[in-house]
Length: 135
Image (cartoon, rainbow, N blue to C red):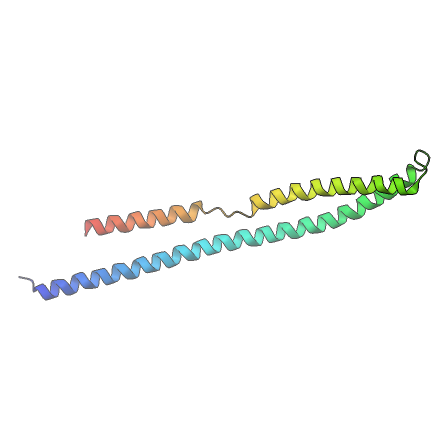
């Protein structure tokens, strides 16, 4: 017949191992989530840099186009000041639309997909519960 103190020690050891395993699983799940968030942050930062670079190049081209339009409007609108105000208004509207469109895109790209990490965590918890119910 088994000694009750030996059985208690076995149960205590089992509970200690289960606790350690749960801690390890939780730590691994947190690490997985951190890695996923980091990957998305790097991707978003790269896209933001390309947006800024593309915006600078487009702005230079747009400035050259506006200068050509200001010169071309000279026969129609005599006042240089009025032609410049018209081009400034076009700059403001165009820039606002462009910035708004890319800002919206960036907000959708920056959200990490936590579906895999969530699924893995649920699977791990379900497996641990199943193991505990069979022991």
